[in-house]
Length: 307
Image 1 (spheres, rainbow, N blue to C red):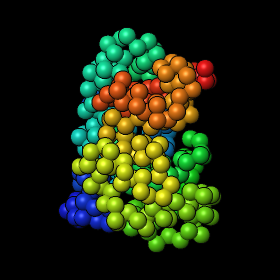
Image 2: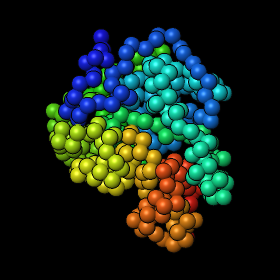
Image 3: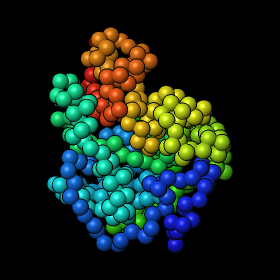
Image 4: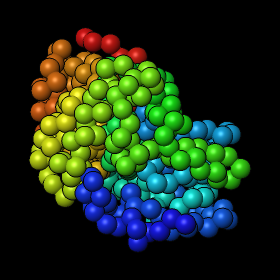
């Protein structure tokens, strides 16, 4: 039987924070609670996580770290299995003050682009993923697209992850550091990861020196510097890991959609990544990560092009 006590020591990636430790046995009965300003489907399908299954019109299996969750939403009621209420709140960002965040990123309704984005994607929250899973998943995202990333992550989980059955469904957990550290480069290449296989193998070999989980206690710039010392981890991958795992909400990752929408509507020119990041840090401030997520969704939905 899984033991919470056994999970609380310092492992190869450092001391695990509470949200990635093995949870105590969850109730076998479906639990529920009321949620406000939350859209489960929009949150899960927003592109921030890659390892989930939609099992019917309003239910999902989500595997993150050592958890396999069954979640579904009916109006303002969220039903779940596989974790405690507090764990569900942490994973789905339900402790974030969304009204305050909306006021901040829309400039009290004066930023018309973000006002429109918030209307379209209202209730989308930033989730909190396991740091190791998030890091490897975003290395797999380099020069890729969401369908391919999801397929790569699923193949990795099926090959090396533990299968968990929940509510008559099954999903494989993301393989742990301990499981992947002895997997050869050739084995990773057989999963069709391309050049990313080498980055993953090299990164895993260096993680004990980085102390991954300790990044939670470092400031943004220090944590980003540590992440970018890993093979294949550039500004975008580091920014995504800091935002979607460590909930450093000042992070503003720049991909092609963000580059287009920021250039077109904010900087009014084809801006560089450096210019975009500097503008976003000054303009959006502490909730830049939420602005980034909504702008990404809006730009993709509206098929924004350059000026």
